Length: 229
Image (cartoon, rainbow, N blue to C red; front, side, top):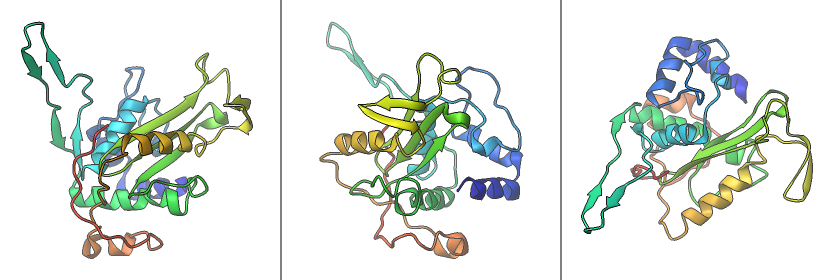
């Protein structure tokens, strides 16, 4: 429910919300400055999937943000290899990141992905539908991997809305956030095949117990590893 996040932003403050988003690498895809208005948390800034997936990966990694890295190593014709490591920093308090993952895991149990189904491991995420169905999103993560899916018409999402369209042979009156969900789920299941499931780190009950999403299933958890993208 987006009203929950609006209420949260109101309590925290717009400045702190924007500051946190920037610490997670959130920036506009067109290179312009972020729009900083009261509706910031509803997604008024245009972002690209890599930026969003990287921000979610930081939550999965207990607040450690690593800038996107396209090339991890280069081997020249003489066989010499140069390796590149991502630049990482602590962007969020680990406990806050754990609590955020707990809240966002509800999308699979009670939210818009509950009818689609999740993975065979701990996972969290958020669906998104823009005004007038211009585009639809699902971004999510496990403790080991994060990804984001965005659907839109390449001819221009504002001029060509996702209403009355056929995707994969199926007709949709309108495309909403849960529809990219199966793409994300199937991709993640394939990418994580053979990777041992890592649970999210348990929420600090003493610190966040009163605010914890009480309907969440109880799971045995241990420390999470930094995720891949």
